[in-house]
Amino acid sequence: MALNKKSVDDFSAKGKRVLVRCDFNVPLKNGEITDETRIVAALPTIKKLMADGGKVILCSHLGKVKEGPNEKESLAPVAKALSEKLGKEVKFIADYNVTGQAATDAVAAMNEGDVILLQNTRFRMEEETKPAKAGEKFAEELAALCDDYVCDAFGSSHRAHASVSVVTKFVRAKGGNCAVGYLMQKEINFLGNAVENPVRPFVAILGGAKVADKLNVIDNLLEKADTLIIGGGMAFTFLKAQGYEIGNSLVDDEKIDYCKQMMDKAAKLGKKLLLPVDTTVAAGFPDPIDNPDIAVSVVDSNAIPSDKEGLDIGPKTAALYADAVKSAKTVVWNGPMGVFENPVLAKGTLSVAQALADSDATTIIGGGDSAAAVNQMGLGDKMSHISTGGGASLEFLEGKELPGVYAADDK
Image 1 (tube, rainbow, N blue to C red):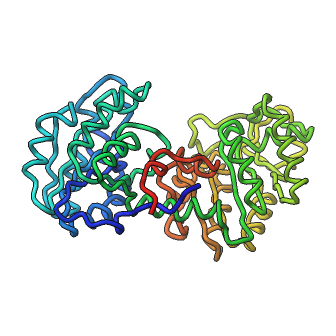
Image 2 (cartoon, rainbow, N blue to C red; image 1 turned 60 degrees about the horizontal axis):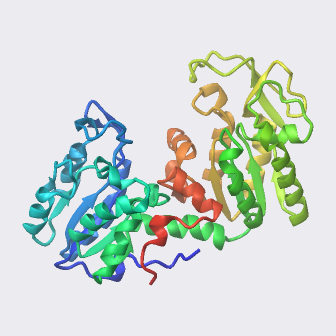
Image 3 (cartoon, helix red, strand yellow; image 1 turned 90 degrees about the vertical axis):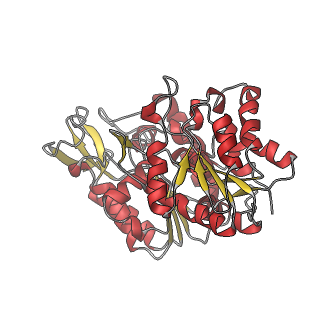
């Protein structure tokens, strides 16, 4: 995996038009942004380019845009938030065409240090259309607006979209730089190097619902990690593969043989593969999910009653997993240990989060639900790094080349 990429520190943006692909896919409620984390995360790169004297052109997608361009998925609220945070007007190009005459004219009128924000890139269907050629026209139009390109959208870097990777072909063809921003660089440093060159002992923790979502991650991490810990719904397929009764717990029957292969692989490689030794069970899944009145009991993982459903790891397992983290020097965690949205069923996830918070290791949270869990529990600031991309971080952990990373120039 080529990780030595050109960054915003490796070229001067002075007087240059720089297109920056950000991840402004923020949650909105009644037109108001409810969580500005992604906007704040983009600021260091934007400020650096402004300070250099660059003309900064920002672009991003927002939402899935299933019903065509619409005001509910416009980036107008993002432009307003950016203006407040930068202390300078960020001119918003409201044109649904994204790269039309309004954008061309606005870029032509820019002074050094100015910032503009283009409309939602997914308002152009070519942003994510296959075949690639359909996206090439849009990518070429984006490239025509700039001299250099910076990708700082790790959350989108696993998608070969026009504004993420295809655009680099056209920027490079005219001699421009294609670099990564500070946010992307941080992800590469932590996630990439944790997997490729970890300080040992290296412990990987995988949770979440389905084995199928993490097949290649399990396989790859067994090669790289010293200890692999399995929790969450996916643990029950492993328990069933050992011949245990799992009651009404979540199971992927098609993956039982795969789980047997992974347990055999761990044994052959001399790696520790830790599975739950006790389980918190209930009569069924909580409805609503956060219902605190759910009645639970703890049973050994090889004795789950046939009429019960496993919904969290038990206290003995939590202690076992916390103990494994204590001696680690690098820990990567992706996926909760149970139904963490429910206060009664969040104990396993909280205990793992607390073990990471108390650890001296480099602790990396792989986005998605794990990131939501540690932030919800107030432990986010105790982690070395929380990834901004759920799907992207999973693919990184699989050892895949991410298009948005791959497309940047090597140093």
